[in-house]
Length: 507
Image (cartoon, rainbow, N blue to C red; front, side, top):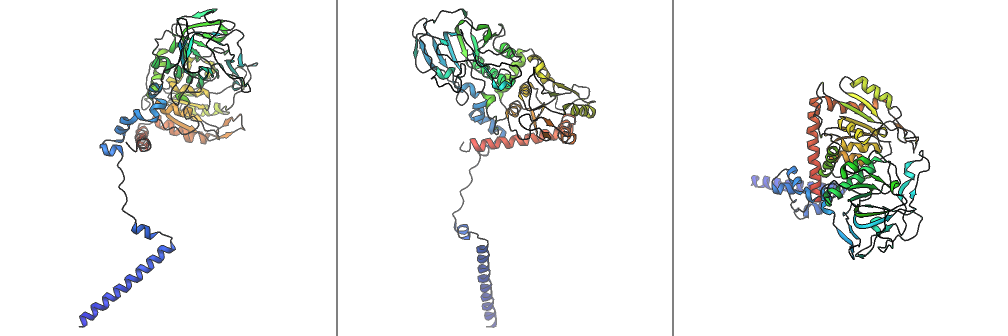
């Protein structure tokens, strides 16, 4: 009887404690504003769908390579561009002497590439849209392209399947305040009457920023894609610049890539003439194309086989070897550190100069001169071949943010690129090129800037060497380089996993 009462008392005591514990727990949950009802009564969670590489039982790298040709990066900065170019007939010839026009738009990249046959250009009384009166003027304020006039294009007997107007809007532009509708009609009364005629295939390039290496490289890259990958013209074409711009070092790249057997013709050579063409391509405008993608925002793309092939094609055109730097510098081997200097050009003031460049250069020589050779180079004074050779030979490239850094396109694998930015500037064009080529890129923003727009930079010694010492440690020390490469492998896998998760989550 006593044993029964003790058991009953124990059960009642346990029950009382349980009720009190539950009550206290619910009170605490209320105080913490926890939704305990939905937490306890919610249905069982749906099992997370396994990722593509998990379902396939392969590595992230293998999955990425399987799906890369379907990615946005392949379409925007790699060989998917060639697949995206769709030939569209705009005008079919209405007779034996008629003009034909075929547009070559590339989805998301450009709309104005086109092939024309049997037509002419009337360059009598042609003038630049915004000529430079004084060489000291800022180049951004001029536009050497020929101004639009209704009779500029001489074509005839063309059965329209669309308007050719958008194809030439960037070749023969109008002033911004000119409200005259831009129209082209293929019924020119002087069609076939020419002062000079090109019978060979012609690559027509209209340069706006004819002084800017970055824009010129963009135009050359676009032209190379269209001429060699889409049209598959043999390298027997002639390059003609349809503008009043002067000869620039990078013009040689166009000539050696697209028409090595023929000299370049400039617009100034054709002024006052009616010029006939048997077969010509208007290349896409310099402000379009793969190098112009994601200049102002984060770039999701890394390697690009198309960009690497363009780099190799330029090196081959200049008879320069394609050679990678060794992973780690070997004692006695060449180690070249090059500063791409920004200096006044032919009387024109330049913004974003490195004010204490000489002091930093001497300090780098003092610290690392026994291992590497240091030089400061003004690319405005060099030919294209000299610029390319200098970049290809450099293990480390340093430069203020500016068009001269476009030359990193010719850097060899394992090159370090240090881009020095004004503190408030964010631009990603040169970083993107480094990513496409697999180069090592460092953005440097420390130091003091003068006020906008000059933004000249002065960098304290400790600020500079805090970054530069890390770069040189990777270049010169095998153990550091090994750890650096191991970290890159992990970062690449994280990036590829991100691409798979965002673009192929339903795959």
